[in-house]
Length: 211
Image (cartoon, rainbow, N blue to C red; front, side, top):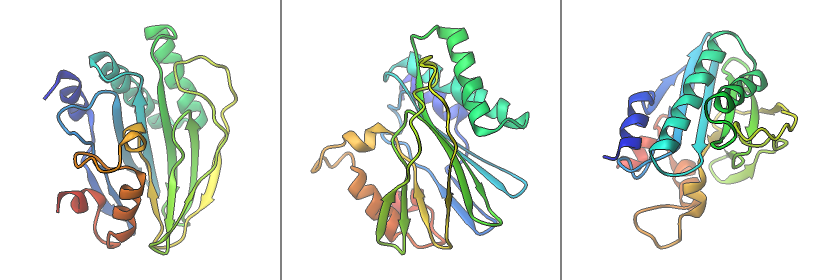
């Protein structure tokens, strides 16, 4: 296990959650060589908080940058900050720590588990994929606000999506996008979407990947 991976796993929440008619499953591969990728999830009341992060680079510095972004996100969230306020606070802390030399892309999302309303912001990250009826996939849309820490000064917009029972939401980093077809050690978005779409509703994605 490299140093960046050890740092990430010490910060990472459990890879699965089930409750309130919602299941969460998360996978990081290759598990012992991750760099700046991270995920986060937490439940507060009837809100499920979700986050996926991708720091620039694949070395120990990337791991430190991702760790700081996740920690700052959690701290802001616990103080009642909205998603755009949270992303701005993460950006402020990253610039304070690193200048504009290191940045993190992210999707920060909240799911109201009572009504199924998803709200989210896009900080320069790949768009989430919504899988409906176990077959139909669409990319959710949200104005691009630029990576946190880049200091681009772009406005941060909040998007909403009404989810339906049985919907699956796929958040991922650029490793999925860049994976080459035919590489047995990795999977692209098509393979990941297929795995998510065929996963039973009471089974998390990490269990599918391990089977």
